[in-house]
Length: 429
Image (cartoon, rainbow, N blue to C red):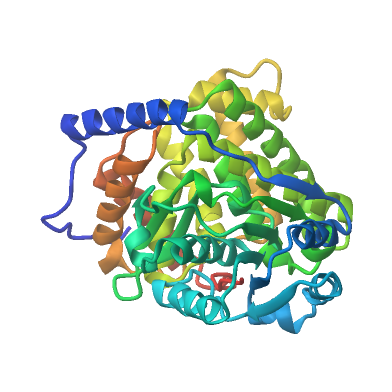
């Protein structure tokens, strides 16, 4: 294992941080009782995208901005939706320059395009990056603010423009979440725009559009959804409602993700994964996330590592580092999935559940290392991840920056031993 010299900024976990986190999570719970979170009207099944297009047409918008990626437009995935909208008299213009992990510059460019065309509604067609960018565009358009000024909790004084979503990946759950993630170009930090009004009015989970996802993207986005569900289930802010959604999502993913990975044209598996992503999105929106996301956000911001890939690699490692605080909960998940033997102790069942995630990763050809990780960055990554977790998440076990560094060192040591693995770190929108 490499010898990493820690910077002077390394933070041990302190009681004051514990109190700050507890107070913040309590405030979030109280706030949640007074602020209603919405779920979009949902259309599922084959041709769900066209059903949503009909719904949009009935609203009689004058100019609809469709935000997407160049790849989606090039592959013709939008053609039938645009044709129906135009046939119904909707004026449509497309912005297809949304990149993976969009920056504020990307979002501002889309906003300027929309304003120049006097748009009055937004439809996002794509993965989480597209949907996140569209959320901020819709909010900025009505508030007269630059996207950067919306960073934080409920910074928009006016409701956003009407907003709709058609996810083309099954992982982020962005079509049901109240947050948007945008990157700072210079620092690579992930910044969050949080507002209950960011949830779209309606969304379509169409397995036909999802069927074009390559196996690697299917795997990474599916593991993203699994991470959402598991971290929501383990959160100290979990409830009966979020547990129900999380467990259902986890069951769907273990059953359907390998099928969708091996047979992308299996619409039943694709629809099940879309629903799992949606359920996991509801769960973590109401319960919060944890250290997997806190660390993965830094890997994405610094190296451009796909968020789903980062989550997949980190999930079993963070779960191991969180024992024994989560032993009983992991044992319950193992029982829900019929993992392990009836005479196992809770410790053995918890270990079996973590093993099952590593086995799923292996089946999906997901590596156990982050090829881009550099030892000189570990202290900085750990410090920023620590701050994100303390300020944002109801984690089941608090970690110091040294605990987080140990997880990263484990990845780094594995990297040195496994240089032959393929690089799956490229992001796809």
